[in-house]
Image (cartoon, rainbow, N blue to C red):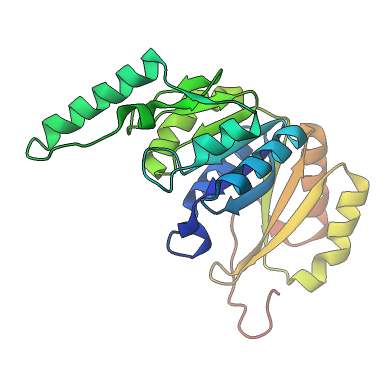
Length: 252
């Protein structure tokens, strides 16, 4: 399964907010064997979001869109997703009742505040979509064909993704090896292991940890094990982290 992630928000592009959602989602999807093929951040612009959703929806097995849902003026994601599929927004009894229930709960926690919330604006979803109720927040997400629309608030995102996680699965497998060999010394071995086995290998230097981290990725457990064993026989590497003081002439 190939998945694209679209994270929505002007605050991501300006650097005001660190895009932890994309990192968290990519890691969770990788754990499920899914290949994340694109990660894209876009502004709170309805036309831009709609164009990317439509394009990625045609190109990938699943698209996950995060951020920009709710009732504030910059929350245009639901409208944009509806545009991408030629749908209108609509409010169901289920989503309206859930938003009202959430507002009642919030009112009990802050009884001295008047909540001026447009319930229908919060509860509106593209027509024909499957609602994803927001147990950790207010505005619901949804699934429309192969597009999953989730909140941008990390706690809400994580809870809602967990409710649909079983709908994401793939054959991607990975394994890490660790070596203190400089990158320049192992290039030929990395090229050869990819030629011998149906694998890709990435090398990620970590000066703070004092090692290079090698990530082997494939779709067959046998190929992954054989490629790992071959590399271990060729270079000074370990399946557990190793380290040394690289000083001025270590890994690249």
